[in-house]
Amino acid sequence: MFSVEGIRDYFSAEVYNEYSRYLTKSLSKALRRELFAKLVEMSKIRKDFVPEIMLDLPFGQSDIRVINVWKSGIVLIIFDFDEAFRIAVMQEKTIASSLWDYFHSLKDCGIVRDKKESIQIMKDELRREIENLNKGGQGK
Image 1 (cartoon, rainbow, N blue to C red):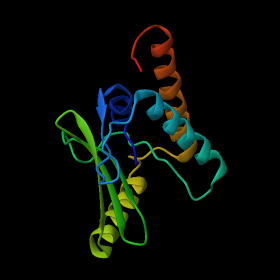
Image 2: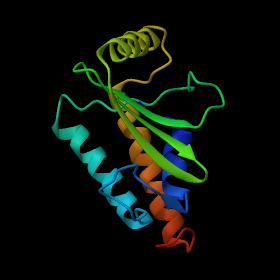
Image 3: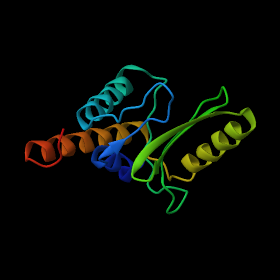
């Protein structure tokens, strides 16, 4: 699950730290663009990878940018924390199944865009980021 605001923050944040003991250095903007482009490509190739853009985040003004819930009980949350992004991974079947049901209910209510439209939004945001970079906008 993404929001357009979350994608734009991902590209524009000066510091992006993955919350992991194995990664202590911020991810560069160039690497973030490359990773995002790979997400767009993967969504075309793999049927089990379905990025979805939400019309509005259900969390109001919170700093949560991305949520992914697996049937196995793993929940991944990316949130903005003191001007740096953090990634939290949790494995709890009960919480995950509740979130799974919740997000499927959001789809039923029409709050989540379909896969085709979501991928198009991702492509548009990536193109917008590259155009900004070419105009001398955001850096490294």
